Amino acid sequence: MAQDPSAESTSGLPQTGLRSTPALDEETPFKTMMASFDAAARMIGLDEQHYNVLRKSDREIAVSVPVQMDDGSMRVYDGFRIQHNAGLGPFIGPFRIHKSLKLTELRALAAWMSWKCGLLGIPFGGASGGVVAPRNELSRAELERLVRRWTANLLGDIGPDRDVITPEFADDSDLMAWALDTLAGHTGGTSSSAVVGKPAEMGGSHGQEDAVAQGLRLILRMSASHLGLNPSKGLDIVIQGAGVVGGNLARILHDEGHRIVGFSDVQVALHDPGGLDIPDLLARRNASGFLPSDVSGSVRIVNEKEFIRLPCDVLAPCAISMAVHSRNAEEIRARMILEGAHGPVSPRADKILERRKIPVVPDILANGGGVVVSYFEWIQNRTGYNWIEEVVEARLRRYMREAWDAVLQTQDEYGCTLRAATHILAVKRVAEAEQARGVYA
Image 1 (cartoon, rainbow, N blue to C red):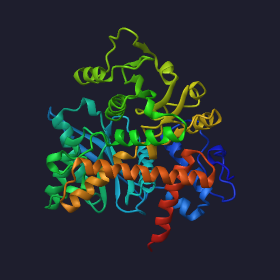
Image 2 (cartoon, rainbow, N blue to C red):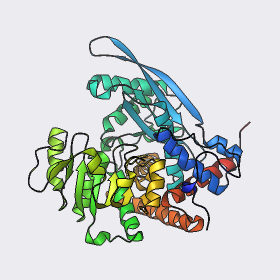
Image 3 (cartoon, rainbow, N blue to C red):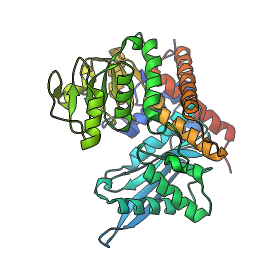
Image 4 (cartoon, rainbow, N blue to C red):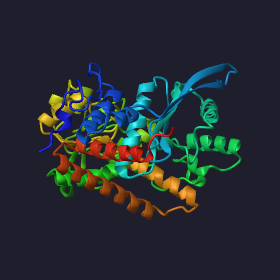
């Protein structure tokens, strides 16, 4: 049986001389991404030259984003676009606005997008970008000016055949509309396929709003059955995060007959072993912006530490990176973990969970529905033909099923964990495309 890379030390890459991830003194999204990449590179025997190409971004673009504020003053924000690897095709990836946005996080997200596209068979390379700005403190007019200026500053670097912009959140369709309009105004054409996640009136695809959650549902059904759980009888599920991913996932799984026994957002974490009333909770959250804290009956409020270790069949962390880390992994009482966010399980926690025989379905597979439907929108815009909802759903099922089957085949071949198998397959596909292209002199 081949050795599982997740069990290897990150102090070096044996047999190859390749550099490895620095010691994980601090668990971060970038180190999480690199740990999985390094392990996959070892297992496939990636040569040092191509390892060095894939471990760094193709391009990292920094721009100044001056914005005139509503009071007449001018503020200048830092903007970025990270383009990781173009081996598979044009870049694609999200645009985010956050006051504590870090360049290392954008690098991790861009690489994750590359691996995700390789895994799911999508002809794109990964990208990510954004602006370091306090989004919640900006007015709608200031936010629009920020998006438009960031887009205008990157005119030579984005486009339908260069780099396709996707939303960070499914309800960011307004931001995507402003970005597209800015591109069209400068290029003299519509450039509709340069931006996805748009409003339906501008060529947005069916299924974009809950694409990530639908992909999670499909992978949950396949992985639970494979791991000996019985989804047809209803599972006890804990979901961290009640936003676009977690909220939609809770709604979908509740409608399918599963019991959502734990549900949280940034304000409150709720637990009911008999199953929470998800429609009521979501309705109240839509009205106030937060899950309610005035609970009664068997529902109780728990703290963050207790929430993550609630007993359940499936723990779905859909909110933040590093939700499961070395300090709480020993206390996890889920039978499996389904990663809805990017990097919600740290490398150290991964090793602990493997030792405890708690399987983890990794992010680049589990939350891949979003980029699949983004690819569908790009195709529809390029052809000028909008697919009906049933076609989008059927083709999403096909992509997720094919990826899951390929991961299982890779797992059998290498005798490794699900995380190792997904990254082996993803890195191998990206590396093969990069090797086939060669190096342009």
